[in-house]
Every structure is written in structure tokens, then in C-alpha cells.
Image 1 (cartoon, rainbow, N blue to C red):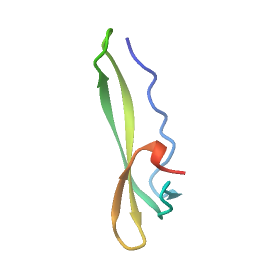
Image 2: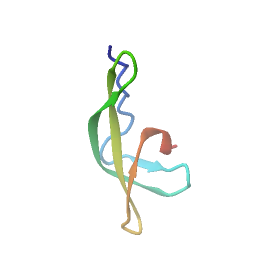
Image 3: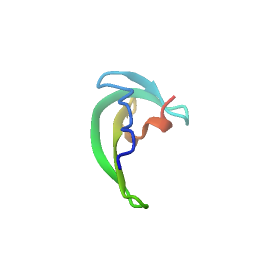
Image 4: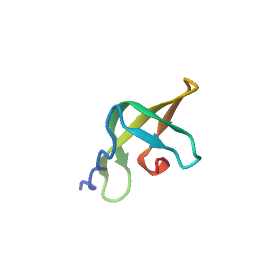
Length: 67
């Protein structure tokens, strides 16, 4: 069984704000397979967004952490 893949909502260069109110620019996007071990075993693709804020700090975010 396969769960629906997460949609890639943001791309490199997009200006975003986190739920905590920190603003920055998406520096990179990576995808990885997540295995959900239940009956039946399933998997799906999840995206991680690396955002760099104006102070130079990097944040590794999931889609639900970005407004």
C-alpha cells in the first residue's frame, strides 16, 4: 500500500515565514521516503525545506511549519 506523497509546496528562492514568525528564504529542498509501519506497511515522500533567515541561521522545516 502506498500513502499519497506530500506535495512540494515551496522551491529554492521562495520567501517564507515560519509559524513562529521567523522570515527567510528557502535555500534548498530535499525529499525522502517515510515508511509507515502499520498493517499494511506503507510509505510516502516527505519534503524538508532549509530556510536561511537574515541572521544567517538555517532552519530545517516541514511544510506544516511554514505559513
